[in-house]
Length: 206
Image (cartoon, rainbow, N blue to C red; front, side, top):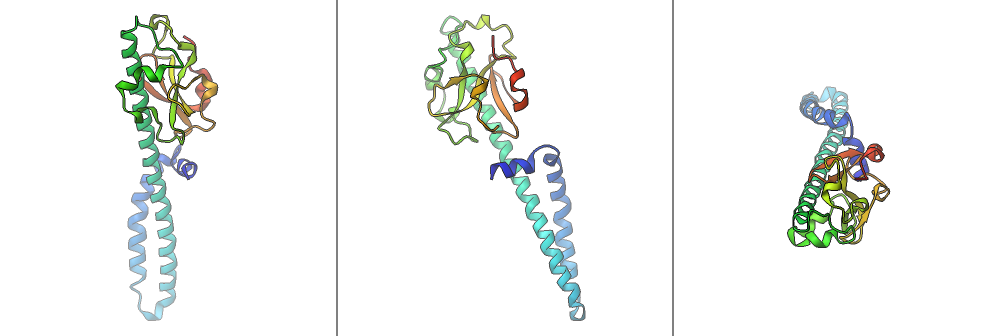
């Protein structure tokens, strides 16, 4: 179902669906009401009116489902971005108390667990108990060694069974969770969405 909604709300349709909703709704309702007002000698027109109304209603349902799907997927994407931003900021706060050194990759979730609610570790679009992983290349690394923190991936999406998951770009979910892309937490505390096709071009090494 999520793939169907994504197909409706991805790309140009993301703009067209709200416009179709605004156009089709009044036309379908008004046209159906007018055709039903014909007297009995014109019942064939009434039949066509019913058919037209059913077609209009079907189109309306498709537009509504697509619009709702777009809104739902966008909401999940926004929540995931918020999660990764909060996780990234918590990790940077941790480094301030540990000589500006990033946490061990296999304990990163534990060291910030008391700073965030458990839901922050879960992507709303993932069926796994935990949805994120720490970039193995940054394990225990002094923050000053990260030459371009605004471009260096620190956290990535991953289907994980534990809070302390770690990995690299090969650990990304088999299918992108958010409209053909993934969300990453960067070493400067920010979080951004990127298309899956651009994953190899991101900065994974410090």
